Image 1 (cartoon, rainbow, N blue to C red):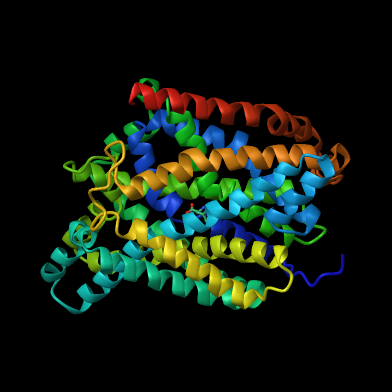
Image 2 (cartoon, rainbow, N blue to C red; image 1 turned 180 degrees about the horizontal axis):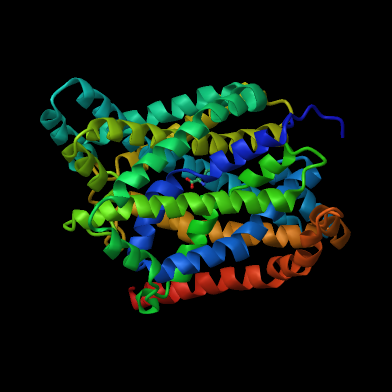
Length: 457
Ligand code: PHE
């Protein structure tokens, strides 16, 4: 079909966007505390295995769906539904986009927290540190719901403005500038962190697997986080796949994105845990790991304000890159499904919807702080609902749509590259994961998690 669909001029463009979308707050903020919650080393091992065994093949499947149909996830799953005769498959795409919008609103609240610390460190540069220590206190931010809402709105606005500029001109250049800086800043912080005396203890916690620490829900927590961090189960990679060039080899791209994302997550834990162990009064399972422990530590060391600023700038860039990916998916689905819709308009409307939805999580720790389910706040429940329950379900749906709607021939053509011997030998394994292991493990994870809910772990 001769539509005017953008595609990347260079292969580099794809990696910038895909890696930029994958590496975000999921790696730097969420992964460390999920590791803490699930007891350290054993969970990291489980997570790493799941990322490679289930996450990467699913990512490849999403890319292939997009590249094959040249459409985003709603239309792609609709087509799979028509091809296979199972029309209800179209609901998978719709659910994926719904999850994306809600995640964007939730993600914007956390990005707003990053913005808060960034500005606080900036202010600290020009005033006395002691004065700002109070203000950077997480509790102060938490009790101020309107501030959180304002920051989240500012983040959504910035994201919309970047996306309005379009796939090629806007995003490629933007992300191209920020990535190298991001890597350099994180590297500096890791070195700093490693010089702390708590490092040996941390390494034992992170890399010595104690399987007795795993709970019923750990498998699903690992899977949910794999999907979240790889941006799988949202339809993000379907959209990115639809922009790929004909000659791009999808499995290579999928594996590279998985590897880079996993490395960044590992770097995040070795960066944050030495600091957290040092400040032992903070539980390692707390989402505040990054927003409480780190700023306080940084403010206490010489040159810490500059470090803090650098760190939060880099964290914000990561959050922005990921948010751009989320919004991009919603917009591209909208434009694909409704031909008369203009891209710019769809972007503003999607931003407005995310803004409306953001009210609930933004006010979760202030006005709505008494609304607690299972002892957890609104925002914590939203995180769990989205990432531990809905994402695995959508991922399973995408797997089923892929298996039913794409023929064996197409799968083989997309996967096997005649110049790459590995792709021949990997092909049967990949088929096994997509058709059997993937769905079984996802269902098992969900079932064990249900057991976990009753066992109260
Ligand atoms: N993968 C991103 C992260 O780890 C989150 C995200 C999900 C971004 C889906 C885009 C799409 O932070």
